[in-house]
Length: 281
Image (cartoon, rainbow, N blue to C red; front, side, top):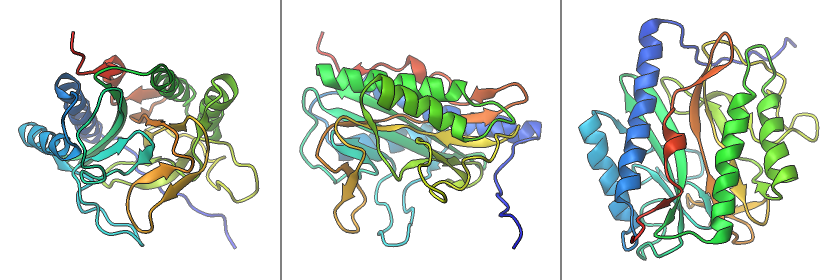
């Protein structure tokens, strides 16, 4: 049998690059507005509705609403709203109680704009932050920064995982959840290649680990970090994925485009977002 061929989106024309940047910046602007608006007492449903209003102003639409995966019902929300021990894929009715002081809310925003997908996540402490919450947030932000810095054309995808895993698990003492990772993006939400946050430990665990970053490749890279475990659980076919031990988690995600000399963070500006929102003073 011949070698497996991996196909992925490559942005090469000035128009495609401009459109990919524009889609990513719609996500950044949504996060900026959220950071000014989020506060104690809001419900996840209200947060989701707020994002819809922003999407309409920015002339984009949700890339998540109605998304289907085998074994799951269509995703009900316009955004992913994952609270405390939810790692990813929380829906607007996953928790009905209002946000309370010290909650950790990971907001994953995905949009369609000018034919391209923008997809990026940030985690916010609501009202005030716990010491452990801030430590997790710092780890998430820095792991994303280090991983992006490791992306270079001609280098294998595993360089991303080495940079992220080395910082999160060896230096910081936290856990990267297994079985979840980043992906190619472009004109559809999930494209090749899969971008694991951890290096493979046995043959076949991550077949694309030694595939190389190529100029024009569009990627959504996303560390998902837990306080106490690398294992996750879900409630049957329900969407939210939780930490297996109920410990806190954070999620950070950026869109990048591999260039001839390194990579461009298409979601530049996310790093300026605050950790704590809705402070009383």
